[in-house]
Image 1 (tube, rainbow, N blue to C red):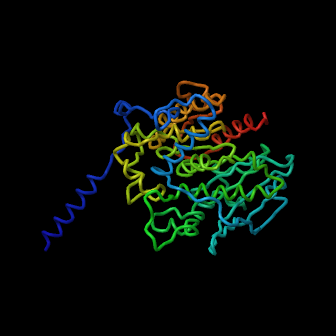
Image 2: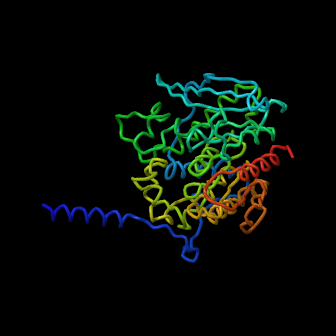
Image 3: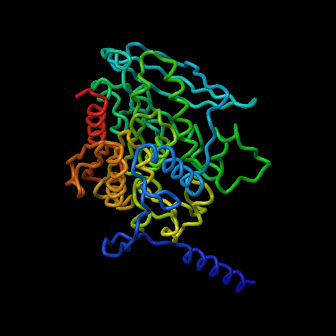
Length: 399
């Protein structure tokens, strides 16, 4: 019996090692690859005008990402409302009005709610533009009491720049774990008695869907300009921000802060985090639809890559950012993802990235696609926020 137990243990260890996909951090080991062309249709026709992009190619790419990566999210629910919990017209030492409440969703007899925290600058002319953060970290980072202030959500600095700043906890929209992720907004649409389809929406799509419900609320308010809302996310939140911006054209800007694989970084580079890491049953498979697992250690078979995700924002502005020490997120792959989206922007009469090579740390490149890389590790800092606000100033006509 002891021998059988030992043999079983060895089999389990060997199977785990066989499934492990060690990350590559050696640029010389990055493979050669060919990217799918965002401006060639599924039947091989070139896309040479805006009508063909919007009527043919963009819908094709949306369907490919839905089917193979993020899953199909539903349309709006039957009802979206707002339940005010707290309002303080003299928040942040009088600089802002705090509005804290629940986004309340009802659909087919079922309901769900998640909290929205919103600061609106008192001195700015209304309606004001807004930066909405999908907070994937502990709620203490966005606590409205400001007892614990971090650079992750520098509300005071954003208000001083004349922007409203908002935050939702992604964990409240869809729990960020593989056991409970269907217990948030998904339960309004998913039948727990029926096995999920392999292209059913994952957590990232649910978080973006929740962000769209915030826009539904903003559409009912006079003091937030719903036509000038930037959706910002860090890490997994950055992945969700890019897909949320692609799915909902009401977002004026999408901002990806160190989103890595499944976000801005090219999958085919196989550098740092890879599809096999994301889809591992013990890790983050629930962020994506089940079909995405077909491409673990098989990235070349993907019918799309992440430059095409970024291109789905066109002609709206989009921003990608990296950190020097964040090799797991593949900073070069993030830059290349943004750069290779450029031809779609150019087709639509916009500039893409205004540089051909990755800028030096701390230097921002702001076209209709923006990019910077800063010193340091995986985080969202005030330096990043300042670049994002400069970018938003440029595109919202506030320079």
